[in-house]
Length: 398
Image (tube, rainbow, N blue to C red; front, side, top):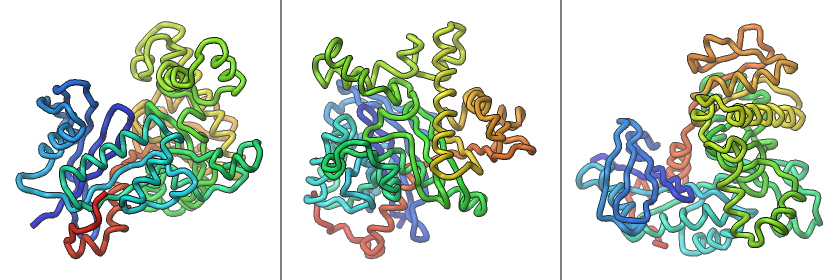
């Protein structure tokens, strides 16, 4: 009988799910989709592989919403063997995937101040899954873990050492995406994978990572997912003095300032129209054009900074929704990096082929789709291998 596994990639207001069949000691993706959490009983679920939207109703709690979606995904009568979760922040403690147990869940919950908008929803999903499937083995894969390899020079702020030791430091995010790209590069081009690579994960959240031999050396995001390059609604790097100014004069409460920085800035703030790159590219207003230009300019600047960290650049990999599907953004970034010897093939770039650099380019530019859910499934299998082989469902519940 086929055995199935689920992955959950929770955001602050949405959830991506993956459905995997266990075969040959690994999880093989066979489905998945995304949903936005609604306030009422009616919500929709977008099924990725069929470009189908399913309208679901009668589910007013997180548990009932998750159950409705899982029931829709799983074959009739199937019960998952395990569930894996993406946890945005592992803090200074979690630098490897772990099996979720009561004590682990409590330790992750204690990290909520590091990521107050992302950790609580993810933990709520894990608890809901245990209510639906009591005793089901569950695992946590941390977005920050991939960057644990970084040196103190890359991870340290210029603040008193006791604050660094208390956890106020640069962590970096999108680690599951970067881990997937590092593995994909090893399969596609082992020589290139072992060289100096900068990966640009460009979606509504955006960051870059400098890797050598598939190991994270430096990344654009820091203590939080606000840092680095501008994003759909987040500002990216901003002078701490400007934040103090806002706190004194415009936003007197930290919660209000946090909401502003996460939801009112970035491409939306600059354009005054949208945080969606596709919308901005189609708009003729100067503010929309400036938002796009700023996005490309800052990405190119971050590539230059990361080139210092990794000692040069052999390849740049574009991934995630924007990086994979928006040729104009790649072209805009490359325009600022001609000094580096990067040039794109107009034909290949427009077609979103895997290699988009020109033949005479000194730097290879590639487009590779990412799959965070696959990494979650792979890490879960590695942790739960023995239990899976035994078909055991008697792990301690949380």
